[in-house]
Amino acid sequence: MPTLSGISFIRNGIERGYPFMEAIQTLSVLCDEVIVAVGDSTDGTRQAMVEAGLPNLRIVETQWDDNNRVGGTELARQTNIALRHARGEWCLYLQGDELIHEDDFALLRDEIARADRDPRIEALLFTWLHFYGSYDYIGVGRQWYRREIRAFRNTGRVLSWRDAQGFRTRDDRGRIRKLYARQTAVRIFHYGWVRHPHAMQAKQHAFQRLYHDDAWLVAHLPQSADFPATCYELARYTGTHPAIMHPRIERDRQWTVMFDPNKRSRKPLLVAISDWIERRTGWRIGEYRNFIERR
Image (cartoon, rainbow, N blue to C red; front, side, top):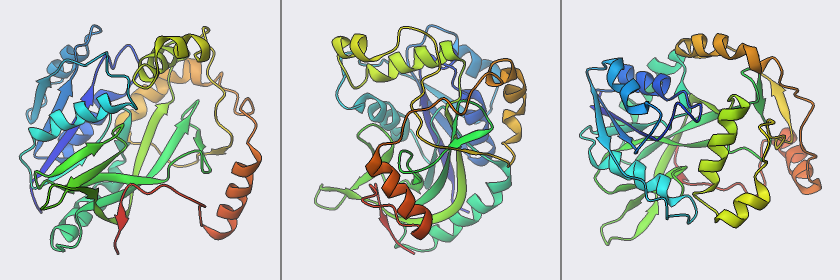
């Protein structure tokens, strides 16, 4: 098994309702070292990490460029700060609202060890579960990305790309290209859309500032703390959650029970047609791929 560095970034994770400590503790179990770029926070985020006492955790303190409002690229810049400190042969990346189920730990280790023996494979693809509104529902259809890179060889040439959803690498000539990646059955539990409405409001405001100017924020962001009804289609989730999430799930029931899965946006016609084809064939028309898949 190659050495493994866990990397992540966070800023004001408590105020914005991120399960970032659960994500970091997951990385701590799986990795030889964990590097987290901790932005200039005002809500005790850094202190919570220090008090966790994780022996393999390294905190890298950073300053966010609040004037960078171009395409969410500040997220990639923060990811790359953590990545530059990684010393492992492979990296495992989790954002502050992403977790891996303990049932997948052995599979993850096996897949990394297998890929490490195959020089054709530079990265691994994981499968996404996007929870929405409560821990009992997931968003489905082309509105949600299905898979992305979250583990890759630490060659020193890999960089977080655009708004940190995926990664790229530099070739021998310095040109940027996609990574060659293999699909796995490892699941990412994405809890980015399961937050108390007030935390969701704070998160949405901070997140959209990474993409838009103040005039856009005033025109488009809701002023109330009502949960946004932006999902087109939901499916009931009947599986289990990572054990480390159980206390949070129980604590959050006081507001997740109020989520109405029937309150959602109308699906555009072209999206409905695409989803209909995908359900019958498995093919998603025009799906964006942040990678080059190899088997």
